[in-house]
Image (cartoon, rainbow, N blue to C red):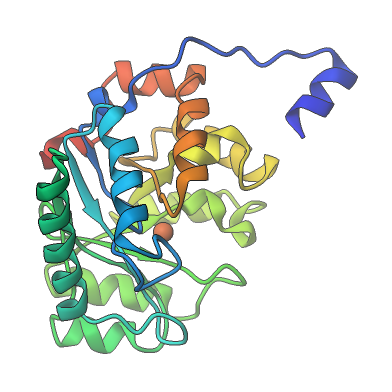
Length: 252
Ligand SMILES: [Fe+2]
């Protein structure tokens, strides 16, 4: 899309030399590497291939985050931890040096709030919880769920805020998240235009407004690894990584 517009308007997006993302970020906090339990890696062989790709970018640690979604991916804390142990065993045999941990990407659906009350959420770092919204509309219980998480001592991290189209015309909503002390995790690949040109635009605006605390790969398959190499040529990515404005490294 950008390519087409660039041709029409004669604008050229500046691309820099690729940069080893992991050498700056060290830790990836959003991915789908546990085989066969969500729409990410289907088997251990694929997981190993993806993790080799992540390792080659200079990452040291991966906190993988399978979907927990009542309609589609009914994963429990126990199934996810068991999957993490299997991945650890497989990478040790394969000679991959990454540290592997797990949390989850919780969908804010009807089964999420009972999990908060039961204190049954997988966390990373300083009690952070990665959660996502449905893509259709803002859920009516959003504020309540954030409040309940914070009351229970969790620190909510909103996954890929730039991908929620229902907020694109209402940038104030992002400020509301910041005001509620919700941290935000941007998908690196949003900056390539992979999801849509509008997602890319909002991603750039969130960065420009210093609203992003974490970068994540949200890697599901090899295509996402290739896109990360493209993203690493973006000027905005070079800038934010060299300014050391993100919190990924603090999770090492
Ligand atoms: Fe994800």
